[in-house]
Amino acid sequence: MIRSELVRKLAKVHPHLSPLVVVEAAVESILNQITDSLAQGKRVEFRGFGSFASKIRKHRMSRDPRNGDPVKVEAKQVPTFRASKLLLARLNGES
Image (cartoon, rainbow, N blue to C red; front, side, top):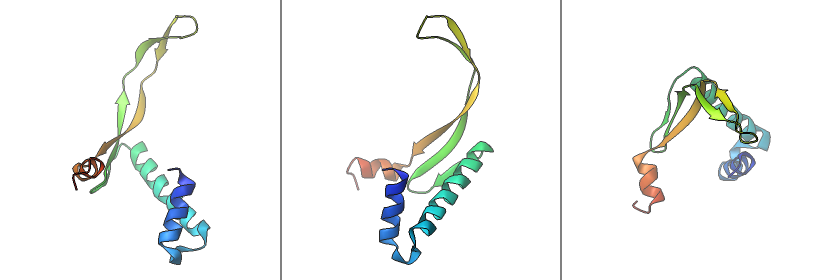
């Protein structure tokens, strides 16, 4: 599912949130809040769904695939997601 599909489905389930731009703004606001929290190193948890966190990957040496030369990859912060037990159970047909 992509963002526009999510917006359309939310608008269909909650018609009182019309027009569509209201739903788009709400989705955008939620995603911005999650992103801002992760950028600050905070964990974002949705009970029954999962949690987002940021992790720092250490710098490392890699290789340029075009010519095989060694390349230093700088340390960086990456987002991670961990599914809840409830979500995993639902995906595996256990609930």
